[in-house]
Image: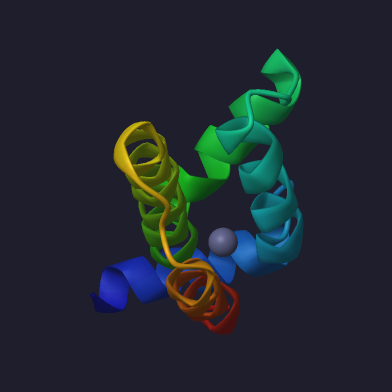
Length: 91
Ligand SMILES: [Zn+2]
């Protein structure tokens, strides 16, 4: 955990992209709209940044959950919003 925190700080200060930028790319990537260069930078970042890595996994599982649920029934809007808020508050 301490090692992860250290690399997170290091990456935040010296890394190519910031966590803010990383979360912007996350939106693009989960929507399949990122370029290969953007995806490369994003992957470099989440490899060194645990909070962003977790956000990515969370976002990915939301998308998957939505896709599964949409085939069956509607997901409550407030549930989606509360999960998204958790992601935003993560940084
Ligand atoms: Zn990050």
